Image 1 (cartoon, rainbow, N blue to C red):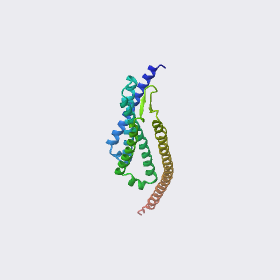
Image 2 (image 1 turned 90 degrees about the horizontal axis):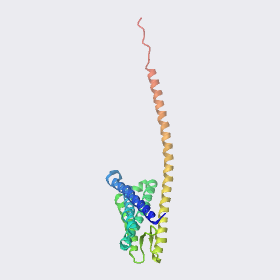
Image 3 (image 1 turned 180 degrees about the vertical axis):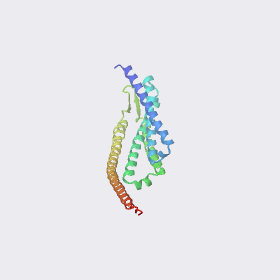
Image 4 (image 1 turned 60 degrees about the horizontal axis):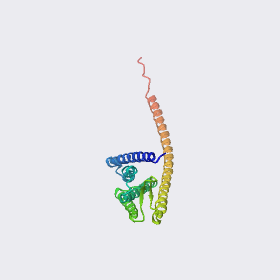
Length: 239
């Protein structure tokens, strides 16, 4: 495949990914803001996640695709700024996944504590702390020797080839992301296991209730029949 054809395919793919991603996450965010039942801790955490995803994916539509077409090599400052924004948005997306996993776990295992830990006020505090951590993490890439930019030759975002950039790439970005996602996945597995157990308990309770209702209904029918039979009498004949 020629380089021009590869660029065309990359532009179409990035534009399609950006458009679909922005629409999907944008619609999700609007629904979360409009529907009253979603104005809960879980709804606000999901809104945080959708917003981070929308910001991250928008870089492919508004920067990556045009960059491949017109090669804005002289706009290095803009490229670095976009790279920093993507790092912040990606960190926020992963952080929101972790918060959602913790939210589901506590709701399943400690429902009484859930109403205390995940009030709307506390949820806004959790989101603010995570957002501040992500912004602080992104500020590292304002350093001259540490940056994260889109490389047109390899068609991917890459870190600076300096010691600072490689350290951030390997230990801060790669391993931190793996640990966060793995921990969130483990929490979700625990939540799933608990839900399966609860589902089994509810199924047994439902079957027992169904048997009790059937027994009571049968007893009422038998009682009604015996009561009705006792009211039958023979009318005496007039002699």
